[in-house]
Image 1 (tube, rainbow, N blue to C red):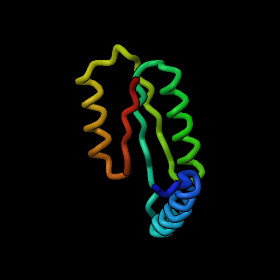
Image 2: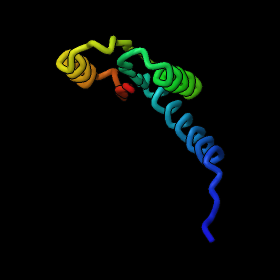
Image 3: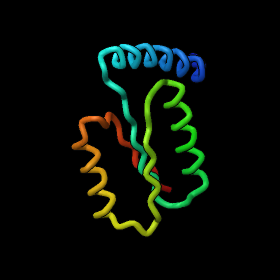
Image 4: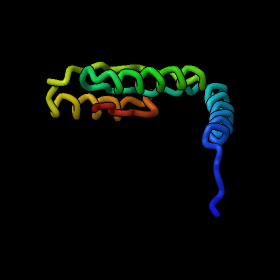
Length: 98
């Protein structure tokens, strides 16, 4: 029989470890920045982004949300991703779309 894992406990342990790592980065003058590009007005996506924002705040990670309309061109989104990739102060990018 398989082993049942408590995902919530594992996630909380991982979050505690990550929070300590973030504190070390901050002591070295590094402010982690997580950018989210949310495309469209999908309610589920908005909830997901809101949850990610709250979790990042709890961890001590700064975040910036880019809310784009569903009509945004692929080229425009790719240009934004490229711009964020080249920013030395951005440490993570997530593209959220339905």
